[in-house]
Image (cartoon, rainbow, N blue to C red; front, top):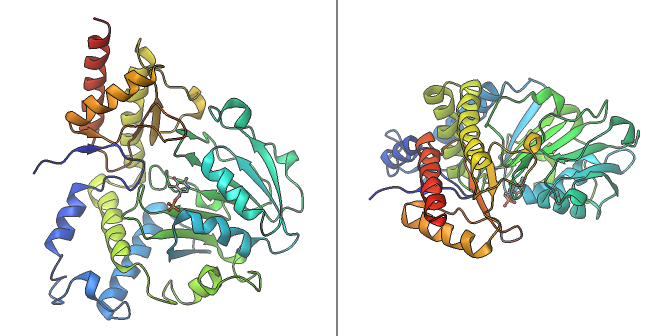
Length: 362
Ligand SMILES: *Cc1c(COP(=O)(O)O)cnc(C)c1O
């Protein structure tokens, strides 16, 4: 069987090495006589796995000691509710930046719990540019500011972390976590669904500063209360055991095979750079997102002709370049080139795009 280059926005490719290790350990994990899927989450063997996962994440991301790392369930979408329930702890106000569909959804959900205002929006620019955030526009009594750091659907990203002064900054980093080093201390809370850049679906990672924990609303469901999760080391109930195990393997791959996040960023910059460079020099394809707002993980591009876009995706698929269709709400194409997409996959895509362009101009 030959593997395809899978440009899906998520769930997405995993490093082949990780899949091989998991396959080797599938039915007998390190002489335990059982699969990780069959283990009690309270067993010593599993304790080792979840502790390692946390330790490697802490070291790879250089997470400061005053932050808790939580392994949760429910996807990033559940955090759209958990964040306001836990963090609207004083004024009940929060300011949201709308830079795409997921931040819009986060905003809509938060409105159910407090006085939520739009701080800045990219809607007027059809989300092709990241909106400017001015610290002076933030309500001084806001409990937090929420952003989505990388917009998976439109393929845009904050080039710089916005300055929110003393107001805690909360960021959805589902589609850019582990793609490059990030200064965790600039944030009050980071959250990510694992299925883009960390592992399989089912695991959600929350990294939260300790002083923000413990003030959840009375009505907060127990499974959404960060304090309960923190006090119980992410094992108040059964955690997503197998997803955490694969995440641990992915983190070890970043640490040992790639050489850490600086190296990861170097590779990702090179991959995205060559793809954007080709698109910008192409007569057929264009990348609609403005240059300084472009994502390194999700590269959106179009031909300008929906029928041609459709043909492109179809022919790409025959070449083993799959899931290039843009999000149903945006159209065109989107190449998600997360950490696990080999550089050879990007090269193969560019080669095919060149051929397609030539065949169209005949
Ligand atoms: C995929 C994604 C989500 C939704 O994640 P789920 O885990 O499916 O809830 C939210 N935000 C961003 C930025 C995403 O990329």
